[in-house]
Length: 94
Image 1 (cartoon, rainbow, N blue to C red):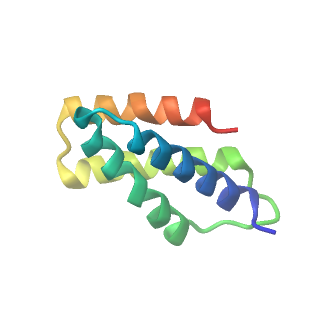
Image 2: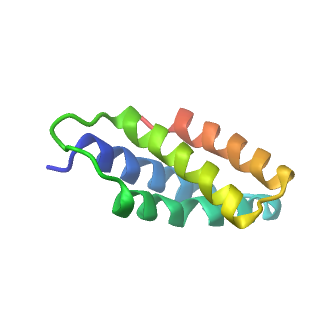
């Protein structure tokens, strides 16, 4: 059985994919940016599956996004939209 970190990552990914399938054109860039970051976070994160929580994924993903925003010189408007979509995805995900 997957650990809580991985379960949360998969749940969020499914939610983002569902959001992408019904998204207006102006949200496709943000969602397309967010979705592949999930797998990167899963690959790069170092944690103990015995002690990790689902909330640890959310915190790790947010930190990851902040660093990729800086690396990619993400525009403020795009960052804000990604932030809004992230909040929407986390509220939709159980």
